[in-house]
Image (tube, rainbow, N blue to C red; front, side, top):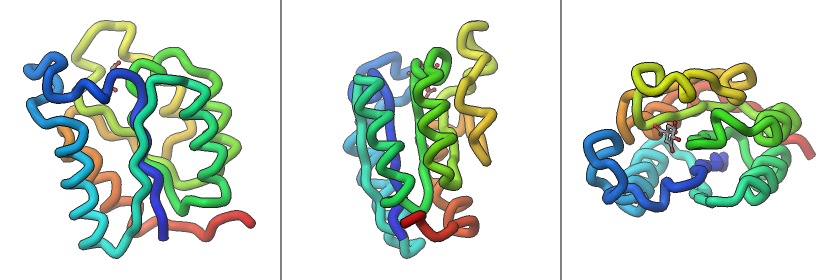
Length: 147
Ligand code: DQA
């Protein structure tokens, strides 16, 4: 089964962006580790990052027929995007929302998520390990794709 691992805006700057909050690993480092975990679990992944809301919406729409599950860190769009919420509702895939930082311990504008109401699982504050935990959960909760 294939899992889409989707990352939103500014996550391409991991490693140099606020390392005290997001750590020193780059997104490429995270991708390599997530791929190793996926291999161990017998999952295939498509890893994708975009700074553009519409591109993320289009990937989520593809997930309806092409992915057995979704791991998504919508980054700042978490707090703003009805479009991503609606796309996830349409995709009807088991979905894990991941935040590297504990958004609830940060500024109030990070406390609300448009994604959490449609996510099956929400992980925040586990660092980049959250992506691996998300795969672990999905491995036990996959459904067949729509065709
Ligand atoms: C984030 C938290 C968001 O509030 C922020 O806009 C991000 C990253 C996280 O992974 O902790 O870009 O989603």
